[in-house]
Image 1 (cartoon, rainbow, N blue to C red):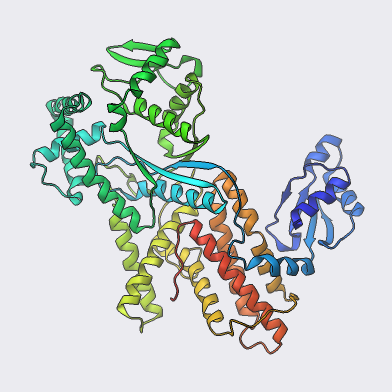
Image 2 (spheres, rainbow, N blue to C red):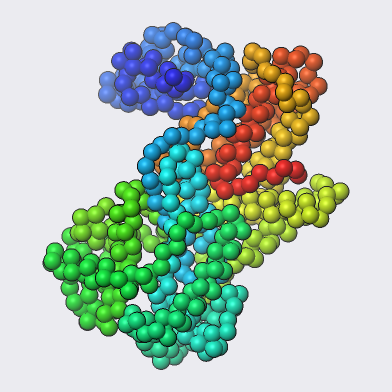
Length: 552
């Protein structure tokens, strides 16, 4: 049993079933609160009066040392003695907070077009997807991450055409400039678009030379993107190429199934699905699956890919930009026609420049590589301010950990449905709501533990100091936070929790002597708390894809 279960059991015993508990932001309002609004509405009574009646019916027990009514809330306070027992049994376990969930979950994320070096805006998809994958693995699930490579789309064909003009002698670093130039040319020169569509037609018909051109360009792009993301610690279990679906019978099978269900129309030579029954926000009820020349569009290939994912596992997650909401509804509707359930979507908003959102077509971008380089340089400057005696090798190593951590935390601490406006000063603030601040507390805990006798045994834990108890109670919340975030994917809740935990650790450090403490029992108890903190903060940051430094 845990404290929350005990509180729910207490409420159940007085007739309140399936009680929903809250964690108060103010420590003076207890560790768990029960709001009486629903009962008051149902019974047409004053919620404050109901809270008072409930509190009077409940007596403290081994788990709960105090119950009080404050306005419409019943507040419950944990027993410090029971908390100490749990801390000693659970907190320093390496697996504290981990789950033992069963089943496979497939997470598709990033899936950016292989036509250029990715910009910072695309990085949000990869960071969210990577963190969710890590979170679900921590909960015990068997997680497979996939990246869908759109190697047969119009954008790639444009890049192939541009590369052909250079005899295919192009590097990854040149791809963006090539793409921007050919896009600009195509706006004023209609013949370029005709050449692009001709390339796509030759590709789908299996022309060997055309297939080879696409494969060469895509390899340059995908290899380059993989390296950048790998430097950020983001890896994939599988890359799936859309060209494999063009070569298979799966696209025709989907077309035939839709025809049998009388949901396919031909308009201007294009095959389109009739979605008028789904009330989507579209001007026309028809969504095309092919061009007039019958070459496939992205949606048709994505349907085939999604059907394959569904065959692999019932639980599928896909990370998408908010501009794809209508597209996803179209995909979901077509899957429904086919009798299949769509993946769970996670939508995210933009990372904005002052001039607006980033666009690869216009070339108005901040490349992720440049952003990463700048993060390392700025971290380097901050570290040297604090440690002028650090060696170059150590500085280079720690600057990456701090710089990349700053990027990740600054993006993941914002709710996905909100825009991120990146601020370097805020992101690299060693004393603010940032990864460096949290990372520094980890290093501080490590330094303390390095000074002590590691074989020293801990006796009875007896926490009485306010800052010890607050830290212990905050650490106790970790498994619940992990469980909650793994259900709703709101990574900002974990990010905020880690910052609050780090702040409480700093308060504990400033107010509770450790290495200089003369009372041996108190000293060992505090050391135990530090060990637990070091373990929890490392696990929490790891879920966000953030490494911990060994020194700062």
